[in-house]
Image (cartoon, rainbow, N blue to C red; front, side, top):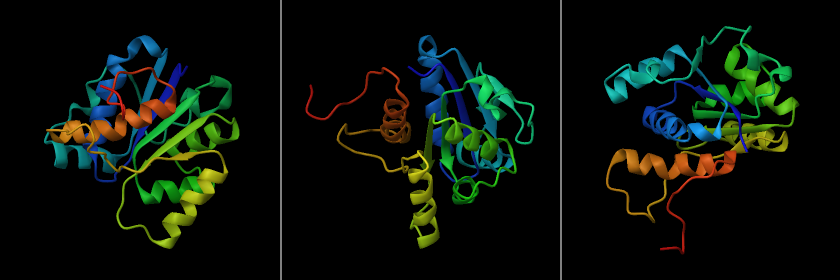
Length: 187
């Protein structure tokens, strides 16, 4: 079960995914010991633009600045066992795929991969070019999981948050959380 989680929020469009992820993780508090969040300045701007608020800094979690290399999860010895990047920009994907640890997000991803722990990248771009696809392949070969921001509609979502939850729930499943969500073929 996941117990020390890093959530990184990058500047790709899709702040609603990050919001729904944080909302759900707070609801699943009994399933984690530590939840740390690092957010780029671009992500803060996208959040404000798309959601019309700055509520990203109001969650009961530990926040770290993008260039704070003294954060515990900048080292494998801290034993963070899950990292979720949601949404994950193609620039962040490219830096992770090529081992460019130039900020806390990419350093933490590098640590998670080298320690053979769970890295989930919710990539958010369309269409993909060949560079994106090759970077996704590289991260997958290295042990990461690519989970595109591709919603499902089986559950007949009614609101934007419900649509985003179809992807977030999948990510939480991949991360090892026990959650109640729509399951195909069940009532």
